[in-house]
Image 1 (cartoon, helix red, strand yellow):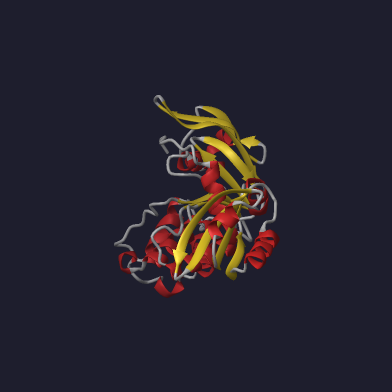
Image 2 (spheres, helix red, strand yellow; image 1 turned 60 degrees about the vertical axis):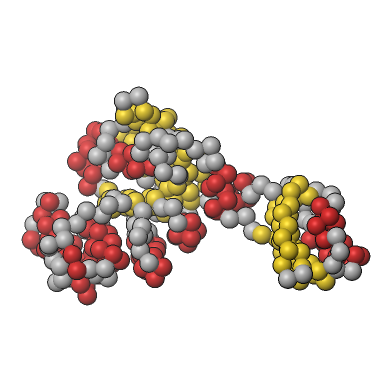
Length: 312
């Protein structure tokens, strides 16, 4: 659907995006991740045609967007992180104003607004001032404005920022529904949203691509050392566990007469049978034993641990 080809963007001496390349296929919902200052917002602004790259190209279906920037912009819907809205306007007025800016005539405007209102569920607040709406409904109004012109590509920058847990779930569900009909690039720091809605991830750090792939692929290739939690009652628990082959690190705490140990083992070696056998042989009472699943947050920290502040 679109591709970023060896794109670089500088602000003076600051390299915000550095020789970046990735592609997004039609119908994908792709998570766009990276620490603050990784170059995500700059990249999204180049995808919307707001900024021009200093080097490289943005392509829509193989054609550079610079050849017809007006047409390229008409294919993209963008919800920026700040979600700028005119609070004195009614939601209906605001959507009508956006339709006018998009060059729609009255009939097209009415059809487009009706469709966007139905998709985003803002009918209940359609005739209320935006300044009186909850943060969740404001995000919905912003989403309605972003899809008003029926874009093929939807770019969302932190759509759930500042929302309470219930509102986050609702917006997450809405994004998943919108993604059924469009190609979506979703920028967020909330890993639950990524796992719930995204088919693939693109991760940046310091303006460069550091990884891309499905959640499962990244977890499989970047999970690192296996981690275990053991809680046992008996003598020499910490010392006995530390002596097991393959144990590389551990942290112990005392809890109501029991010893709780967090272990790290190298590679794919499975330590639970050996831990269970050791507990049986030493006469320990085993209260807890489980292997922790590698999380997307762990993978993200691994990939971006050498972060450095750069401009967005």
